[in-house]
Image 1: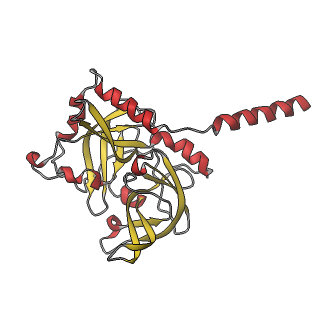
Image 2 (image 1 turned 30 degrees about the horizontal axis):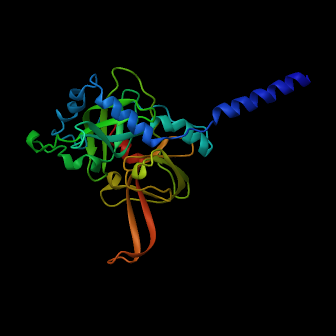
Image 3 (image 1 turned 30 degrees about the vertical axis):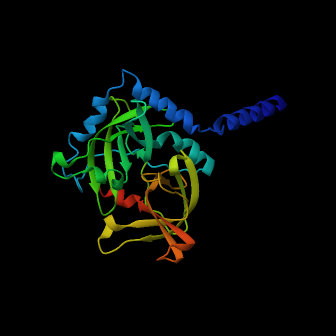
Length: 291
């Protein structure tokens, strides 16, 4: 009996150590690996540019058929949420040609995350809006910027198209090319209430996979209804976090990062910063674009 108890304790300790081993992020090596990949002769830039073939088509408020993963019901520790969802958060990156080296370089543009196993990704519309999305005229599309997705292991996904978006909500859904393979995705949850816990994994200023926690400060909307809804939270993020996922305490998507609003004592001169409102789009707005 004592041997069984001792064996059980050893197994528990081993499982705990394995489950919660810390993941160390090396941002420099990650970008170095990605730049090696895009400069490899086998890398197909034509696939990257497929993104722009239908970019000019107006797909605002287009309802799409999408099958998100089933929402989780078990409450998780914060460290479990980070460990479980880190692989499902991607870098939204720009690829450009360096004038100095004549090689392709990579620049961090934001955050993105999959909401279906077949490669539907959620981002903020403002991350691509300046490129002429939905303009109706192919000549108005800026095709000089090449965009890709990459996970924390350095696996690159190219983007096929923008399938839907909404300007008022500042959200867009992309379809990535997964080469017919299923990828791990994030389940969509339901709207939270003021006071509930939230967790964000984002890339502020290229500090990749930064984990921030907080609470819902309030939920708001205006006369435009569901597409005007915002979730103000106390979790921290900054430029580069755009498109980042906001999770509930079960690891379900509760919203997506949108913007920040800085409040100064002297607002006109922007002196004496008092607080920064972190604004996110709640998941009910995302659901409104899905059949």
